[in-house]
Image: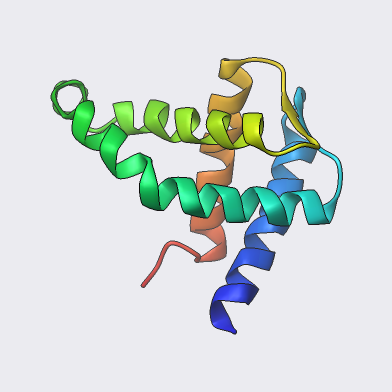
Length: 111
């Protein structure tokens, strides 16, 4: 039950991000919920592989390249889910950063 509430809060944060970032569009709350589920699956399956493959760059940039990896995962999710759109990779990068900050403020990153 706790995980479902966390997903619903993340969906709300996605809607807030879509409101704040011009060019990042989410059609409805239920589309945001689907985006959260797809992002969860991609974060489990794809993100660790990308982190491993980009480890040398990540070490050279002191971990800042992880922002790019997060944006790539977000772009993959945006391309899979109908009803979500992004103008460019830069827009997706900005949306990814805003979502990370909002999640941190909401306390979803703890545990």
